[in-house]
Length: 109
Length: 336
Image (cartoon, rainbow over all chains, first blue to last red; front, side, top):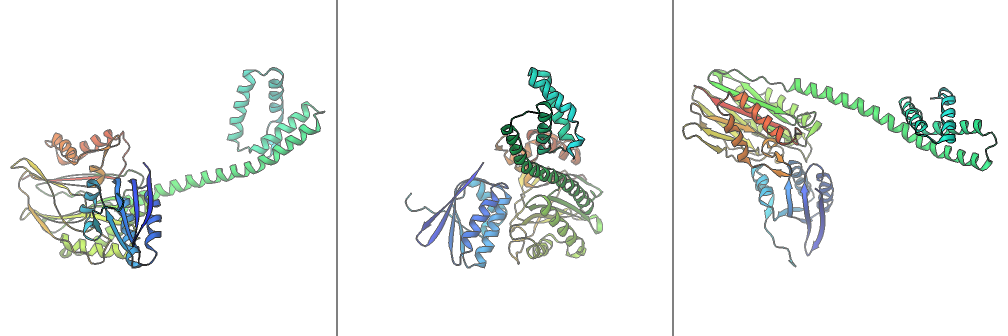
């Protein structure tokens, strides 16, 4: 399955809306897109994962590298609206304690 | 190869036969000849050149326009031929690379080799199968004083070669630790520092580390974000998930890992695994974690090694013998 990545500009933050599966095939594309966004100093990036039905450990690797890059560039990363199966992955790996994960309602919905 | 080495006479005769009769047998002859060309690395432009030569011999008065058009075709085929040569070279490189990877996989197997220890009163079963050539899963047994046993089960993210290289680093980091330092929480804290300093930002490792001491029948363990295993209590005949907290290795420089204990009574089992077991798919659907337990229950009356073998075979069949992820399953059972 494919992954689509749409970036929306919303007031003081960028929102990357993901739809599809994040796995070993789609991870490189996701990594490139998100790294590009957080490498601009002091960006607030929210990744809306409502439409992500599956993420494997390669996907987690992408999120970790984006988190590290965000810290380096004084940017912020937040994940929102994770489906239960994806949330479980963040919980097991302990990443829910080091990444800002929230439920957010986007404007205009 | 030189055009002269191709049998011009056979080609010309076959061409003539086809022009005169347009029959199936000449077409079959053409197919056979084409196979021989491929086998002998004859390039497309050499075939066109052969065709021109044959035409000129068959029809010496061939119109100038046709002759020119054939030369034009020859020119276009030259570049096609170059690309084809490049493709051939790449194919050969790929074969060489594949054999190198297979050598590397053998080296990895030797480097990471760990023997299933014999410990009185403990029945141990283990299976670890890679989805591809190199295994990103890892298990390790360390036998210590008074028959104590250290067990590590780990999964490196990404897969393939980088993951496998990373595993060797982990193994050697563990090898240099003194036995006194082998307490699960301590070892994970130490390995986290090694991984955080040495691997790429997008790589991380999940690991479950346990130490079993037969003198007090205690299992002490800690987990770095690893897929939870199961504990089977023989007295109540129930399974429960081994719950732990702890961040995966390699994300923060100073992660600490809580330590846990579990008393192991006669007949109790510890089931450790990687997500390659719990994330098996039936078609496009993931299995439920409980399904792993259902399969284990079916074979529980057997020795531990037979249980893991049967569970592996079950999930291998379920996925049409094509693993999507490395698969590692370890079962320990206290016998006496």
